[in-house]
Length: 337
Image (cartoon, rainbow, N blue to C red; front, top):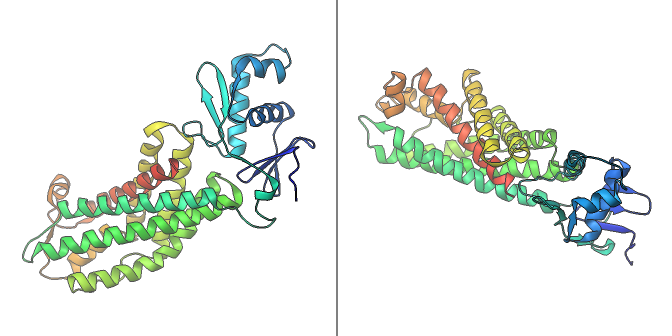
C-alpha cells in the first residue's frame, strides 16, 4: 500500500499535514495550531537547519514576538514528543541559530500494524536499565566487600557471596525495572507516571525472583540459610524509585538529574529500611544475627556511626547508599538511551 505523502512518520508518531494532527500510534497529541506549523516545518526540513528568522517569518508571519515565544514553542513540542533537549531524538538545538529535526522519517509501509506496540525506544530503555543495574550491582558488591570483614570466619567466602549476589540482583533488578518501564513508555510515552508505574511493576516481579536467587546464592556460596533476601514490596518500592529517578534525570540536564535521582533513591532506601523491608544491607544484618560466629564488622562506615557490627544506624545508612547507587546508575543509563 503506497504511503500518503501528506503524512510524515517518525518512530511511533505520525504528522498528518492534511488534517493538521499529530498522532502517537492511534492517539492524537494535542498541540496548538502555531506549534503544529513549527513542527511541520522542522520535520519537512528533514535534518536541515531551520533558523529563528524563518520561524518568525513563516510561523508567526511577521507578528512581533520575542525569542522566548520560540523557546516556549520548542519546549512544548519536546514535551509532546517525549524528547529531551540534552540528548535529543527529534529536535536538536543549533545554538544562536535555530533548530534541526534529527529523527528518522519512515513511510506508511514501514509502520507497525494498528494495535501493535512499537518497542524500539522501550527496548533501548530495557537494555540501558539492565546495564545500569549491572553496574550498580558491581559497585554495591565492591562497596560491601570493602566495608565488611569477618572476625572469626574466613572473609573470602562472604566477600564472594556478597559480590555475586549484588551483581545477580543488580542485573535482574535492572532488567526487570527496565522491561517494565519500556513496556509502559511504549504504551503511554515517556511520562513520569508511566516510568514510575512501569518500574514498580518490573520491580514487583523481580522482587520475587530476587528472593529465590538470594536464597540459593547464600546457601551455595556461604553454606548458610538466612531467610528471604528481598521481596515483592521491596522490589516494587525500588522499581518505583528507579522510575522516578529516570523521570527526573530525563528532564534535567547534566549531572543534576542523576544527583537528584541518587537523593531520591537514598531517601527511598532509608524508608524501606525503617519500614522493616530488607535490601542487601538488611540481608547482611540478618546474616550477622543468624550465624553465631560471623562477627561481621562494618569497617569505616561503622566507626563513623559508632558501631562495630550491623547495628540500626549502619543498616539505615547502607540501605540508603545501595538504593542511591542503583537508582542513580539506572537513571543515568536510561537518560542516555
